[in-house]
Length: 508
Image (cartoon, rainbow, N blue to C red; front, top):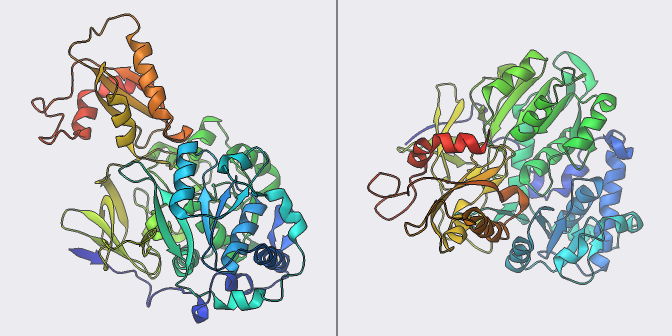
């Protein structure tokens, strides 16, 4: 195996004094604006966090307890998260778009005993009593309990901070454990790698950096960017989604943004040609078409492609403004080592790497995180992703989709022979479906029968993972024609090549 060490000396930034993430809040000028949409300074946010943390203690939450949080990106989400972490409890994010099946799995697997929800409409989705609403946090901003400091001081860098559920090949999401050290190493060293980006409006401009953050905080990418902004004291506006961000863009004048490719492509389709002070966009979560990169470049915005995964608290590599290299996902952040195995798999080592999956993972390579992605490194340490080993699709919105459960459910229908889900690098999920040899492809009502099979499969997943369109294709997937392995696994690349015209029709 070959590997390229980070070009930065040492191991990058780590939490000082082996403390927890609460120490980040008190490490900076308390008078500086932080969440500008709320008119909240760094000191005021710290006070709010400590008040909410004290209320959590009064209500019985203790070190190690899992607290589920369901809602869109907001000041309240950030406040609840930091308060949970400050007393050594564990945040369990829940995607607002999750299905009932997924929410039940996350809650039962994590053992969450406490719950935050954005609204009264969201609260029943937990199926529990005593769900706290985001609106209640306004009334929790009282003086923290007398034992808050004692609880805060017991939290250590190696303590579990969050369990983030990410799609597994079996379909049931796996709970990735991330420690306070993991989260800090990913965020603080992203700030280091990006040089002035989180601090100043431009390289030669002393005006402070500003951003609008609409990435979901239920995804670790959003929380890593949020923590990076807190560490660097970036003036930040928290927004629930891209539509709200576009409405705020002219007035707020951000200097940089963080997006997934899907959002960039949506904005491009709107035909925007003026982006104010916006100079850079950190883009990760999936591959981005070169024509989209070129579009933004023509309008004065540079795309900084990055690479990461939940198991590394998001950040592995990122392009920096001064050394951005198109076609790559940048160089390793400080403290992180990227290796390339003999079969071209990307391997990652560093303080940002997860200790494993909840509740315990004894089957991990202690030296490297095996990403399942394929790539290559050049002599200067720039990483290029060339493919994927694991059977996880990633839409251009950054959503991980496990195709196997959808395919398995559809194949249960008596008229279906085989099914392959498509969606890697695309804006939505589709499927190619073949019918049993005993079925006449022209029989009336066949499409409706198959639609019912697709609807049944979609009940297992969120809307973002669901199959939006399908196509009944000619023939079948067989070993003889090279579309199945001897063990009857789909040869996805071969099927995509054979049925390229059908796939093109699905996305036309």
